[in-house]
Length: 223
Image 1 (tube, rainbow, N blue to C red):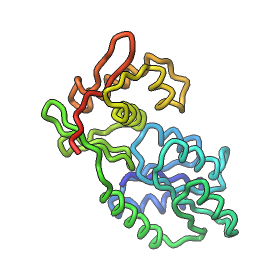
Image 2: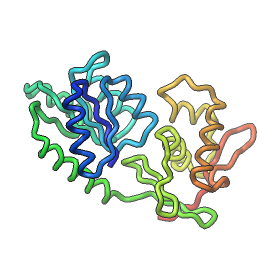
Image 3: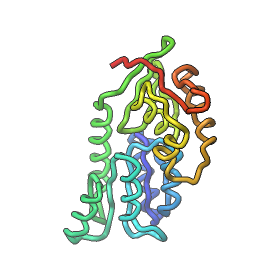
């Protein structure tokens, strides 16, 4: 499982990363919300663990930002014990709330349970030019013939968007509005992302170029 840890206290951050890696997880660490958001936009993340009291953008606003982009699992760590704080974060979309000081054994057990749930999730699938492509929507992962294709988050969002509108021509501006909301990208950047998606899938024809109009997903449903 790919985990992003946002915690400005380095000892706590390092401890979570150490124990999670010992359990076989991949861990990315951030010490402020702005850095964590950059990592989240660039890397595959299955689970976010975040503190609330942070330099700059605070943890509750960070949860809002993540939840607006993804339904990834979120565990909040906080010294705030009041019930209203916990309820507020759960209402924002956090999946769990642990009060500091927390038990590392309890946290690891939660990670283990989440990993099991992720593994059981159903996959979207399509087949084109003899290749089987499977899409795990909860964790933003793409598999080609059983091997993970290593998609970045924006690449994944564009492919998923085109898949959800299979057979329809989607303009560059529509793709920008739906998939690249974290930047002020210009419409031709979509061409670069589509080129990368085709290369990682190993199937150029999965996304057709409709000249003067945009792109169309052409894969066959293999569910």
